[in-house]
Image: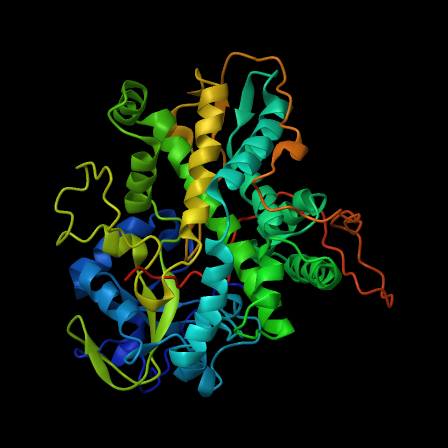
Length: 486
C-alpha cells in the first residue's frame, strides 16, 4: 500500500545524494516526482526540470529519497548503454546500504533486487537474458495473431450488440493478459482472474500482496504441471533451457514477463486507440492508407511511452553525466518520455514520426526490452481487429473530458468511452483452429477467488487466492522494464 507522502524535515541531505551536485542545492529546492502536482502533468514537470538543470536533474522519490532523473536523449542512451558505469544491481544504492529506505516504501516493488536478468550485469546477465530471449523469440507470430483474434472477438462479443463500450476497462485491460497466459502456458481459465490480480498488484493497494501471491501461486502450479506435461510455451522453454535456470529464476522471469507485457501493452493499446479516435489527422491517414497501424504505434511510443520513466541505474563509481557529478551508489531514473521529447532530437513535437523507431520507449543497450515485438504484435493485431469489426467506432465524450491517473512511473487513461452501430454478437474463433499457436495442456480449474472483503483463511493449502479487485486508485508496477535498445 502506498504510504502517505512525507514532508522533508529540514535535515542536511546525506553525502552522495543529488542535493550535492556540481551546484549545491537545498533539499527543499528539489522537485518531487510524486504527489498531485507531479502526477497531474508529468510532461510539464520534466520540461521545468530540463529548463532548471539541463540533461540530468536532481529529484526526490517517495519518502524524499534522492535520485537523478535523466532528461536528455543522449544522456539516457549513455546511462543505458554503459553498464560498467551505471549498473542494474539495485543493491548498490546508497539509500539501501545506509538503511534509509522504509520497509513499506512504494519504490521497493520496483527496485528491490530479484534473481532476474533485469537486476544483473555481465556474464550472469548474459546467461539469464539468453534464456529469456530464446524463449520469447520462438513464438510464431501467426499463431499469436490467432490467439489475439480469438480473444479480441470474445471481448467484442460481450459489448458488440450494445453499441457502446469503455475501451480501457472492457478491452485494453483484458486482451494482453488473456494472450500472455497462452504464451506462458497457463490454463485459459486463469486469464480473467489474472487480469484483476495483475492490475491490483501494480496499483499498490491494500490487496496487492494477496494479488501477488495469487500470481506467484498460479505460476508455481503451472510449473508443477509442465514438469510432467511440457509444451511449446515460455515456462517449458525456460525450465529446459541449457542456461540451467533455477526454479526460482524461472518463476521470477515468467512473473516479470507476464506483468511487464500486460501493463505496457494495456497502456499502448489505450493510448493508440485514444489517438485514433481523437486526432483527425491520424484517423484520416489510417483510413486513407497514408499511415499504417504500426506507424501509429510508433507515434504513440514517441509521445506517450507506456512508462514515462523507469528505475534505474546505479553508479558503480564517481562519474559525470550531463554535466552533473554523480557519486558512487547514486540512483538514476531513466527518463523515457523526457528523452523522447528532448529538443535536441525533436525540435517540433507536432512533427509526425511515422516509421521512426529510434524512440526510447523500449529502452536501449543490454537491458533492452526482450518482449517488445510480442507487445507490439498484441497491440497491433488487437486494435486492427477492433477497428475492422467496428469501423464506425467514435469517441462518446469530448476529448477534454478524458481523465488520466498518474504516478511517478506512468500515466493511465482511466476510461475511453466509445460508441458504434450495434452488431450481431460475434462468434469467437474455435480454439481448436489455433494450430500454429503454442499448444497448452488441458487446463485445470483456476483457484477460487473470493470477494475483496474476504480474508483468505489461514489454511495449509498452497494456493493463496487473490481478491476480486474493486475499482481503486491506479498505481504502478514493478519489474523487468529497465529494458533498453542498443
